[in-house]
Image (cartoon, rainbow, N blue to C red; front, side):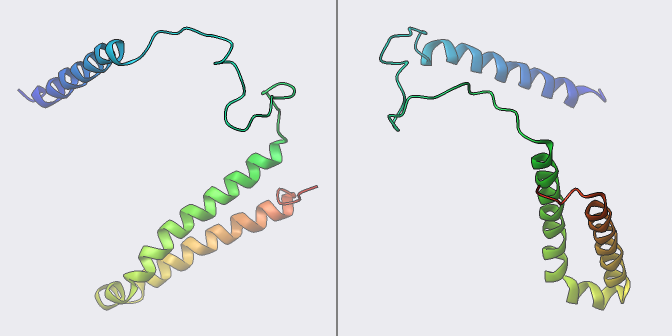
Length: 121
């Protein structure tokens, strides 16, 4: 009886997948390529070259840094909104926790800067 909910979710998931696949057969049209379907869409410009382009790995580093500081903002903004209430209940502890969090992020930024990960060239 402990696993009844697990079994229920499993059966529900399987029913959902089965219903989706069955509905897919009735809703979608068959694949019939034609010359008009292979034309450039909306912009009117035919593609030049291959679609596969290899980017420099530095772009991924910048993307990771963006995600890092974006997540930081997602943590800091709600903390700042509730800081007054938290400080009344817990004293200086919320401020110390945020200072530790921000110092770790600053340390990571300094490390990346010294390694040259932020150089665009």
